[in-house]
Length: 231
Ligand SMILES: N[C@@H](CCC(=O)N[C@@H](CS)C(=O)NCC(=O)O)C(=O)O
Image 1 (cartoon, rainbow, N blue to C red):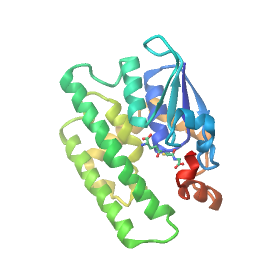
Image 2: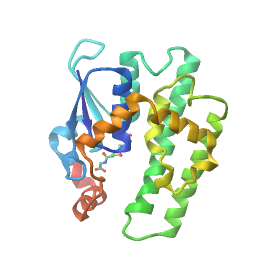
Image 3: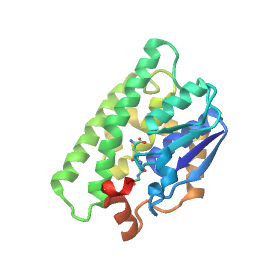
């Protein structure tokens, strides 16, 4: 059984989407990051970066102790290899999926995250920062839209590259006009209509129906961190 350390955020959704799509048995351990659960010593042992998601696999493919995994990109890769799903085995197909997975991890995710931060959460509205991340999100949408112009999914069949990117494409929240990106719009709608994806988001609602930042306390917990939180 895979134990998923989870909260209801885009990086958390990546893993519930994978698990629902693959049918691998799992159980969720909620880690309420708005309340500070991510600083608990037992969570830091699994996820030393005090971020969700993380998993514990007590039935790994090789004998031995349970395996802990943090970082959503590596969790998706680990689960794809464990199940043999959503990652091609041939060199070219695998490389294609992984380069787009890393594109999401190093580009779309962090830039869209800063977009959310400066547009929605920062107490001061800093035009330079807001503009910088709206533009960078716009550029990344352009990259993805172009990629999807002549293919259904990001790399070959539906894969962990699609699973990683989907939760981070939120045009309404990210200052983007989706009609400027018709291929991305078609891809987003196609993934949204998948039953497993709908189940993943429905599960999120049962765990936490509230926004991650809902009051001053959660703002302090999430945006006031320095090295003391991991000591
Ligand atoms: N690179 C990490 C980022 C994970 C991440 O930023 N998680 C956020 C939620 S989406 C979190 O746990 N935040 C808790 C905090 O900031 O203390 C991954 O992809 O797993």
